[in-house]
Length: 348
Image 1 (cartoon, rainbow, N blue to C red):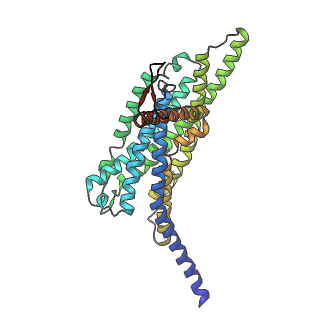
Image 2: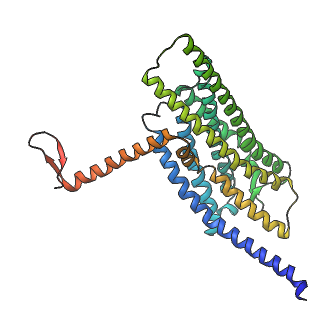
């Protein structure tokens, strides 16, 4: 009797464990990602608005990507957390909110992803040996490209407003719309942009090798000492390339993990019983992995670029001086020196 009940007991324990882990993950996971993501995005804003990077087109792509990453994680995670843990029923009772949320949680991350793609294209252009291609790496081109990416992101997701509805819970309608939406998410949101990132990253690598060979050949023929501004610009470009490479690599790892399971979820037959419980766990886990992709950028940039770290620390120091210097002036009051006509804090 005990031998017969042993497998049943083990399975029951496993089911209970999976349920507990899934519940804890859906509660604490969004909170952790929100804290990490909001802090990282704010630090990106501080760094990429620095004078050293303000006129750099690649840095501007990173800055705008951070804006859409912030909006993506705050709206997506907070709305999901409210539905899962705060008892909000709006998503399953209001068809307009159902459609709007499904639309925004696809369009906003898509725009952030395509802005990173634009940064990889920008680095490919800037590293080219062709002067004509290098001319595409400038701010006026970046403004237009970002506008196109935003419009394309919002327009390409317009079908979601039709495909999603209450049935009775919010979800994509069955049939052809369900298959199309699944393929749209897997390919347009996942595979296509990351394949393009890989291609342009590889072309950038080839351009760098060609540029080194060209510079070496020119230096043999005619030794010219580059001025300090050119060297500084080359150093900035190199650091931004390293940031782009690491950003693209980790983005591919995280997003494609989600897309692989989502494709299986859409194409596989409906799950039941134990498989359904495991599927629920994997869906929750890969959803968090997907949102983690939009919280990582600051930490990737910090670890991969000495230039980014130095600019960030200088900007933080500058803001501390402004804040605490102003605070000291208010608390201590101004004191005018007898020899120098300047206002200094009277804290003695």
